[in-house]
Amino acid sequence: MKITKRQLRRIIREEKAKILKEAYGQSAFRYGRTPPRGKNAVPKDSSWYDFAKELDMGILELDDFAYDMGFSNFMDMDISIGPKALADRDPSMFATKVAEISMFAADLSPTQILSIAGSKHVGHMEDTMRDNQ
Image (cartoon, rainbow, N blue to C red; front, side):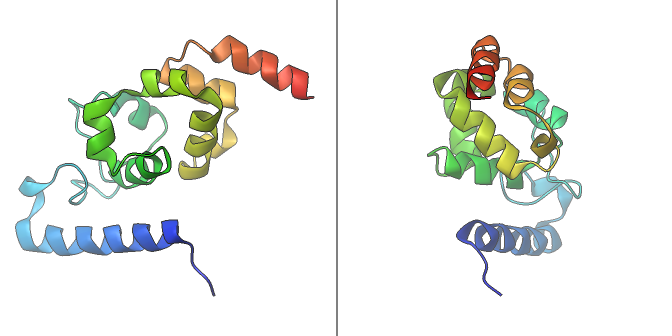
C-alpha cells in the first residue's frame, strides 16, 4: 500500500498531537500543536474561524490546505491572509484545494465554497462553470 506525502504529513501531525496532548494537557494547545477536541479546533480569534467552522475543518486540515496554497503551515497562513482574500487571489485553485482537503466541502460546488469564504468571484465561477458545460 502506498501513501502520499499529504497522508504521511497528516499521520505525523496526528501522532505529534497525541504525544503533545499526553505531555502537556489541553491547556497548551494552539496552532498545530494538538486538538482541544477531537477535530483540532481553530482558535476563535483566527480570521479562518468562521470558514473552518462552516466546513467542519480543523487545524490539521487547514495545515494541509495552507501547504498546498504555498504557506508553511496554518499559522503562517492565518497571520498572512484571510479566506476571502485568498479566495479572491485564485478562486479556482482555492475551491479545488478546499474540496480536496475537507470531506464536507467535497460535496459542495466551487461557487458554494467561494461563497462561504466571502469571495467576490462567486458570480465569475458560476459563469465559468456554465461555459465549461
